[in-house]
Image (cartoon, rainbow, N blue to C red; front, side):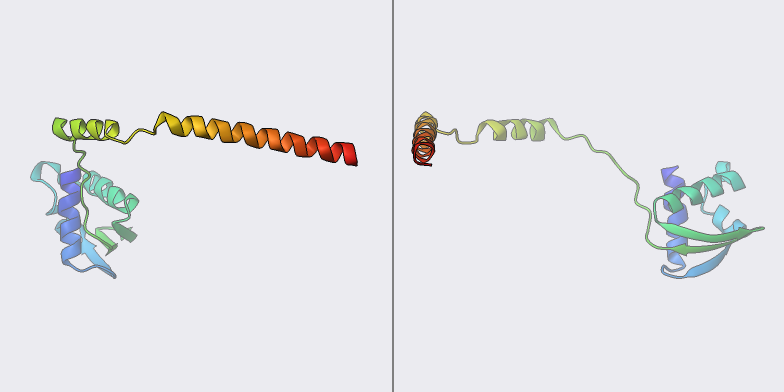
Length: 129
């Protein structure tokens, strides 16, 4: 289906983008492979292009189609990352600098001291008020 959509979109974009134009079924069928030149395949390809936001079909009456082409269809190709790239990503995760243990000790001490000071302030305010 991607090949059909690519060929059909290329033909529609050659006529220009940004405005509605009349296309006849015969000229649209020329963009399809010979073994798939039928109305059902054409309508399926037009529906696929419309759903993807590549074209807009205003109407289809008889063998005439009013179509506005917005942009050329680009098939989605999923590429697997190379083994070297995956290995480089894995190494990058372990290359991050580690936080020294002294930082954790100082943070814990400051948290304990802050809790003690806050408790003392609360006790003094409770006794006075």
